[in-house]
Length: 281
Ligand code: FES
Image 1 (cartoon, rainbow, N blue to C red):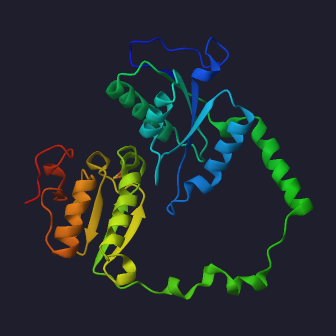
Image 2: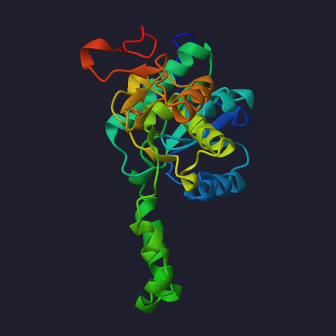
Image 3: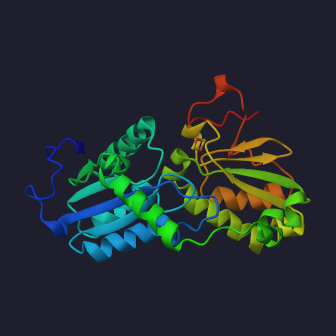
């Protein structure tokens, strides 16, 4: 399926069908992880191997959730690199149809807002490729011939039994910071890193017994994102940006006062989007 902004006709998905390779960027879409090591994990490895093997195309990595780059940011990167066609390749598993449909709606919104004439095409699921069984079988055969078996006696030394994992760290505030897909598309990847950096600069990190921060999946009111919830008050801070983070650190974490400019009262009748009048009373 190809997506345009309405000014350009959709084009066939075959790259050889009229497209110049140097005009083509390929966005590899992964799901991210809560530890923020995306570039060292499988997505970065796939991207590097693809770039080595197919140097006609510009490869860009993007995360559906829990990190950076977001898909819209990756589309910006493609256009800045000169792409006129962008091929989006979901490489995550499981590939939920609603998630893919949502990614297409993100691409449509990006086309509208950027007013770009670039043509975006989504591939079918990589997992449906007839080459997948062959690849898995290759890994199995490698493990059978050269894989190192686990040794049970090593378990006592592993992090699985680290004593710190039996302790609830002392903290004054518990923060649930959403890194779900829609908040990620709205910039929560960058903001999550900014929050951690600012907490450290202010001496508020969990080691000091102040703010215990956890990054989470979707917390539900996606249209209000990027967002986080701060306990014990149970304050929902929505429509976040860096300025909001700075104020919450100063006024809430240091000063103990809810920042009402960004706080939403969790009552469904009284809220719709982050742009509405603040319903916190
Ligand atoms: S993705 Fe953040 S609330 Fe849904």
